[in-house]
Amino acid sequence: MHLKYSPRDFQVQELLDFPRDPQGEFYVHLLTKEKMDTQDALALISRRARVPRADIAFAGLKDRQGRTEQFVSIRGRRVEFREPGLQLSFRDRSNLPIHSKLSQGNRFRIVLRQLHPDAAAEVGSRLPALARSGFVNYFDDQRFGCIRHGQGLPMRDVLAGRFEKALERLIARPSPVATGGDTGLKTLLQRHWGDWDTCVRIARGPVYRPVLEHLQRHPADFRGAIERLSSRSRLIQSFAYQSYLWNRAVSSLLEAWSGEPRASARAVRIESLMGPLVGLVGLDEAERDELAGVATPLFAPDGARGDPRFAAEIDRWLTSEQLSIEQCRANMLPGMVWREEPRDLLVTPKDAQVGSPADDERNRGAAKVELSFSLPRGVYATMLIKHLLAPTAPLDGRSPPTRRRQDSKTNRPS
Image (cartoon, rainbow, N blue to C red; front, side, top):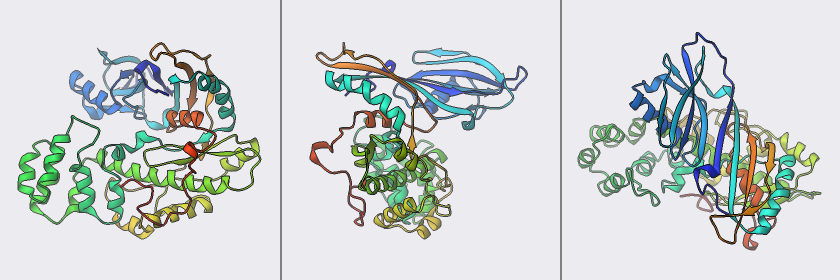
């Protein structure tokens, strides 16, 4: 199966309503973009239109892959902006800036390509069933760019008090999959790690230079050096590890749950950058209602922790990571502090539709099929696709991941 063959094959429309006020100081615009993430798009608009970046607000980040539409507000100005792959058009005024609580989710239109004709036909029957039973609300690979780009999970090292190792992962691990950006700089920093005078001369830009200048003055203060990274970088790493723990604990919980006698539910293997996760297909109404009642909040050291079964799995995974709740409390840094937030274990798509299979004009002998559906904010459409296409038997005859892992090096990103 091929996903995101072109931007028009993966279209996202933000569902958002905002309070309209013809005298409001916030000018609400529709941002349409391709091959550019939200932050990069807003930075470009800020530079070209000479709008302070702090005056631009939005509800949520949209991926660079695909064609996306979302609302942004600009304080005190109407801006019309157009260039290839990026358009900003005025919609209305409001007395409030756009913010995340205004978002009601996203509408997706996705074309799946390079399918076997039989698989394309089966999608038509699976989507309605999945829309009834729901799918597991895992964070998908987009959340784990740190794993894709070879950093592993730096937040794990932060929580363990290994601040030098965490910093080295963050600024001196060149990506194995990227060729541009700061790959060359990271290679040089890796080569000269510990020689802070040389590293400062190498890092001329504003991203890493404050970090390395701090180490020039305080060579042993790696904790303080991490605090000088951008707030966005720290937040991304913090969210990645919090999401990793949630995925792992939920997968372990569902593996145990699916091992009990069940009338209809089957465990399937969901592939991810962090390793396989346990998905469920064929839930009946009673099973769906049972799982929907299991509280699985994002972990925070001082939180209520949700269902006792879920809390027990969080504890097991922390133990396997050689971490304790006390360490998590002691070693969190500014911008890397977790709050407990609710997250549904299951989610059901709304208004799901599927077209008839057709010949894939871009892949000879293959088929394509078009899907459309709506999801709440924070839910990954790609995870729905993974559940939709997951084999109903474990892949290659392998079992789903084992539930209790005490070896911290087993089946986890380095």
